Length: 58
Image (tube, rainbow, N blue to C red; front, side, top):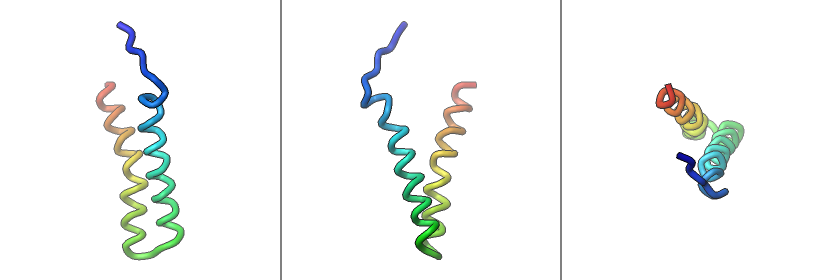
Protein backbone atom coordinates (compact mmCIF):
# COMPACT_ATOMS: atom_id res chain seq x y z
CA UNK A 1 0.00 0.00 0.00
CA UNK A 2 1.46 3.33 -1.06
CA UNK A 3 1.07 6.37 1.12
CA UNK A 4 1.36 9.66 -0.72
CA UNK A 5 2.74 12.57 1.26
CA UNK A 6 2.88 16.20 0.26
CA UNK A 7 5.90 18.45 0.73
CA UNK A 8 4.71 19.85 4.05
CA UNK A 9 4.33 16.39 5.56
CA UNK A 10 7.77 15.35 4.34
CA UNK A 11 9.79 18.42 5.35
CA UNK A 12 8.16 19.58 8.62
CA UNK A 13 10.16 17.39 11.02
CA UNK A 14 13.58 17.78 9.31
CA UNK A 15 13.19 21.56 9.23
CA UNK A 16 12.13 21.65 12.89
CA UNK A 17 15.11 19.48 13.87
CA UNK A 18 17.41 21.78 11.91
CA UNK A 19 16.03 24.87 13.64
CA UNK A 20 16.35 23.24 17.07
CA UNK A 21 19.96 22.29 16.27
CA UNK A 22 20.73 25.82 15.09
CA UNK A 23 19.28 27.27 18.30
CA UNK A 24 21.38 24.86 20.33
CA UNK A 25 24.55 25.83 18.47
CA UNK A 26 23.84 29.54 18.87
CA UNK A 27 23.11 29.08 22.59
CA UNK A 28 26.37 27.16 23.01
CA UNK A 29 28.36 29.90 21.31
CA UNK A 30 26.77 32.96 22.87
CA UNK A 31 25.94 32.16 26.48
CA UNK A 32 27.17 30.41 29.61
CA UNK A 33 25.33 28.79 32.49
CA UNK A 34 21.72 28.41 31.44
CA UNK A 35 22.76 28.66 27.78
CA UNK A 36 24.91 25.57 28.20
CA UNK A 37 21.93 23.61 29.48
CA UNK A 38 19.77 24.88 26.63
CA UNK A 39 22.42 23.88 24.10
CA UNK A 40 22.76 20.37 25.55
CA UNK A 41 19.01 19.85 25.44
CA UNK A 42 18.59 21.36 21.98
CA UNK A 43 21.46 19.37 20.51
CA UNK A 44 20.22 16.20 22.19
CA UNK A 45 16.76 16.40 20.63
CA UNK A 46 17.84 15.34 17.09
CA UNK A 47 19.93 12.51 18.53
CA UNK A 48 17.00 11.29 20.62
CA UNK A 49 14.59 11.49 17.68
CA UNK A 50 17.01 9.57 15.47
CA UNK A 51 17.55 6.91 18.14
CA UNK A 52 13.80 6.48 18.70
CA UNK A 53 13.23 6.18 14.96
CA UNK A 54 16.03 3.62 14.61
CA UNK A 55 14.69 1.52 17.51
CA UNK A 56 11.15 1.67 16.10
CA UNK A 57 12.36 0.50 12.68
CA UNK A 58 14.31 -2.44 14.11
